[in-house]
Length: 290
Image 1 (cartoon, rainbow, N blue to C red):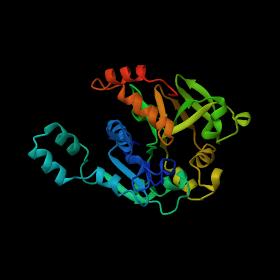
Image 2: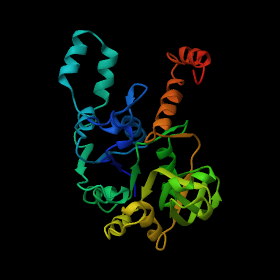
Image 3: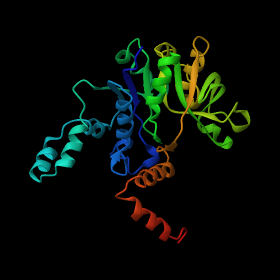
């Protein structure tokens, strides 16, 4: 029952960031000096994940190249004796077989993207990470979720409280807190209107799922947005198995949104000792609206 595999749905076109994403994968947009996808991959490896499964689409070659060797750059850095940078790019490349790629040929939703990884995952529990959800925390979320899973042995989603008027942007839980930061899910609704939402507890992009989910996703029932929704399959799974929510501590940035992406850049840059003082000075000096 050890969580060894993590699925990364990265087939989206990133249309909200056009023209920046016209010829570049959205997941390769940099937050400070690392691509967005790298933060999520590092979180997975830190949690003990042994195999990364990217569910990709057209136009994702840069993402694949990022986690591969670049001999031209390595040679150039060796010649310039830039050993620190050389070490960094070599550490990006995991052992052979650690990263596997499969294609989502049709944009049929998050649930469909996860279903595309079914033959690689097999009959074992697995993690799902959505790179758009960048989380700033002292306790990496997936690591904490795996610790909880080792005891609960059930599907789980990371959750956070959101403003009541924003429930129509998330999967929302009807849930009961059973211990500190752990909620047992009673029901879940995909993107409910604020006046119909059972709570303001929202699912964000970290999951641990039991393999039964593939059977449910394979029925290809469409929900909100005429897409195959993971939330709908989890709701059906709930009739047979318990599901829990883990309320994490930290700041989550929606990097699929332009404002959220800029906020993430600022927050992570302010963590850097080599950047913080100059940024704070600049922030104090600017006049908003001028």
